[in-house]
Image (cartoon, rainbow, N blue to C red; front, side, top):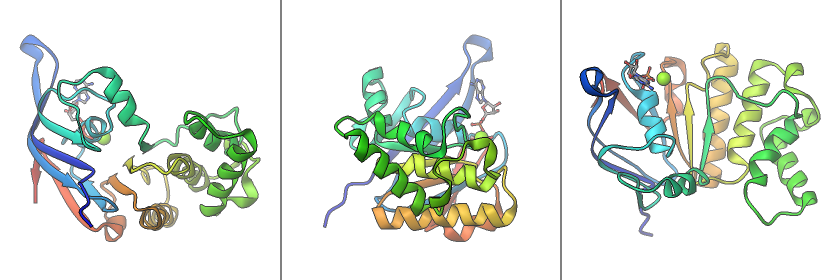
Length: 226
Ligand code: ADP
Ligand code: MG
C-alpha cells in the first residue's frame, strides 16, 4: 500500500503584520504527517503552535513555501480550496466551543449537516452512535451547561470525528481539564483515530499526555526542533 502523506510542508515561513510591524513567526518549517499518525506538537507559549495548526487546517492563508494538505497546495490558492479542505478536517479547541442552546446530540449533528446526503433519521443515528463511542450515551439530550468540563470536551471530540475526517487538529484540548479527564480525553481521541485511520495533531504543553503520541515535535521561537 502506497499511502500519500496527509500533510507535506516544505520551507514554510509565516509573517504577521505589515510594514514596520511585520514580524516573522514561522521559520523554514519542514514537516510530513502520515495517514493514521498521532503527532504531538509542543513548545512554549508564543512559539507559533496555533499559527502552524491554523495554516494546516486551512483556517489562515499560507504565504510562502509549500503546504500541501490532502494533496492540495494551499500556498497561493483560492479561498474556495481552503474551504473545501476544511470540510475534511475535524477541529478541537481549548474551549470546547459547543453551542449552549443545543443539546449534546444537536451539537454533534450540526457538524454532519454540513455534509449532504443524510436523512434526518440517519443524522440522528450517527450523532447518537458517536456520542456512545465517547462514552456519553446517557447524555445525548443534555445541554452543555449540565455537563462537566471533560464531558463537554468529549462532545467536542464526537463533533470533530462524526464526519470521519481524514485529519483532526486539536489545539490544547486538555488545557481546561484536570489531569485525569485530560488524559482520558486524549487517549480516547487516539483510540478513535487508530480505528478510523485518522491523522491527529495535538498541540499541548501538557507533559502528562505525551505518551499517546506516535511522534513528538517541538517548536521554539518559530523553528521546528527535533
Ligand atoms: P502559540 O500557539 O505557540 O502560543 P501563536 O501561534 O499563537 O503561538 O503565536 C505566535 C506569535 O505570533 C506570538 O508572538 C503571537 O503574539 C503572535 N500572533 C499570533 N496571532 C497573531 C495575529 N493574528 N496577529 C499578529 N500576531 C499574532
Ligand atoms: Mg496557541
